[in-house]
Image (cartoon, one colour):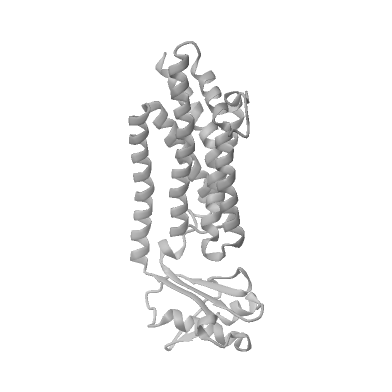
Length: 310
């Protein structure tokens, strides 16, 4: 069943506008990343300590920040007031992220949690497990290794996709697909930088999911293009064939994208803090991935086809 029937939209006629839009997004994101000194990495990659606690009543972050200015742990004095301390979920939940320390005492994270408990001692749940929501610690060496592994995973995925699409279709289609996937990841990364969101292992998983989703969307269009090229042979130019193919697969593209978007939107709204950045990355990825399969991958195939005929 096709929801949208017999459309005749000149998608490729809007290539200049779409390309300008993509360039603006990419440049804005790159500028933001440069200004911020690179992507904002979570402790998964840069190492450090994360402590999340839950009070029974909303608390004042400024009071907590002031109290964390002078913290005594095993005879050492620490100033955590300049570290990242913020609410998450609602104002009863507080998270603190601390950079890795060379002289870190034993049970450091637990003692930070104990300090947080003393600041609002009247607002502590009866059970300790209800107060401490999460304690995570990653050493700087492990964080560095994870950064390398994450980058390798993305590059490997793109390389394998290049080989796969080249074999299944032609090299020009592979170049278009890789350009679209790289475009999707870079724009999502740029938006994360602009909004100040952290790049965690969950976000890297989202990036890889975006790559797979966007590729699937692109292959559907390319498969229709290949069929139409066989039917029309040399009677129609490649731009007309691609426009026709996109219109023929438009109903499927919209239905798939919309249903996926609704699922990740629900995850974003009610899924909680743990998967918040993952679901946000997926929301951006679904939108940008659908857009790029039409306005990035397809125009590149046209350009490469025109160049091959010169």
